Image 1 (cartoon, rainbow, N blue to C red):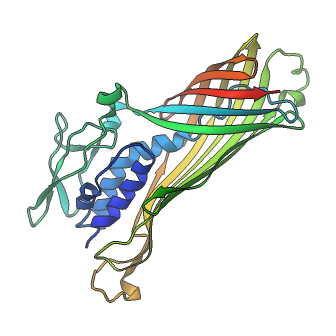
Image 2 (cartoon, one colour; image 1 turned 90 degrees about the horizontal axis):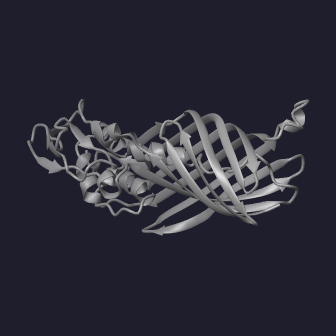
Image 3 (cartoon, rainbow, N blue to C red; image 1 turned 90 degrees about the vertical axis):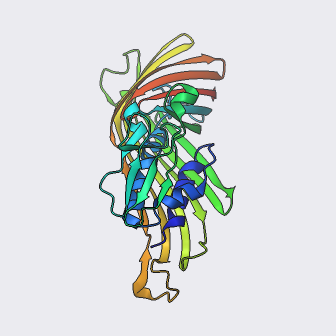
Length: 339
């Protein structure tokens, strides 16, 4: 089977969300022998990126528990750095069908680097033929910037509604990424003051709200392989992130301390869509087609706890917070806040 191009598409989607240039041919060679091997190798290589970046979509929603006054508004830009543990710099490639690891990387002879791993290429061998080839190297983030951080930038718009409620929006219209690629994003969140419904709580000098937010990110890449008969081929990456939290804050002059406690529900998928004639015989018979031949799911759900502070000078806000979760996150932001 010739899955040389299919893995490249999966890799391109992950790397499109970074500023890194990646050689498609390297990924091609990983899965040319077997689709199941290809999913394992591609999935293991990009898993830290997919999980951490998707989880990062739940960051930066708020910097206070106090909703805006009616028709109040803020525009805030944030960047969250997701911390990936050192153990995820490598992944096991045992249990493959047609491919085996012949040579790992320094200090890890039986493992291959993930996307955030060291800049060394593992050597693979095709069982039977004995052919060898190099796998992709990592981005070596720890060497380049000192830590394994994956950034997630975001722009938020908050609007004050009746009953001490904030509507928060994230939106990116479909943009052209070049080479028949596109991306779009949409997010919506609601913060509601719950003190107003709790007898006796109105006089307590802090703000307490409930928050729920959802973000959807989708990237697509159209591609027509040279050697495989296809119908509507498309590589696709989809991320869905939901967070449910209780948020508390206390203002001291121009400084506000805030915190949140809640739960993340995060799912992402990367794959090759369409119908593919995997037998490469040119007949294009319906019974020889496979629909969505590569389909890899990732989940990163779990509890979260956030603590941070905001500095407000007139209508300008600066804030920073740290979140403890599956991948800990440091978030910083700048905004314009009115009412």
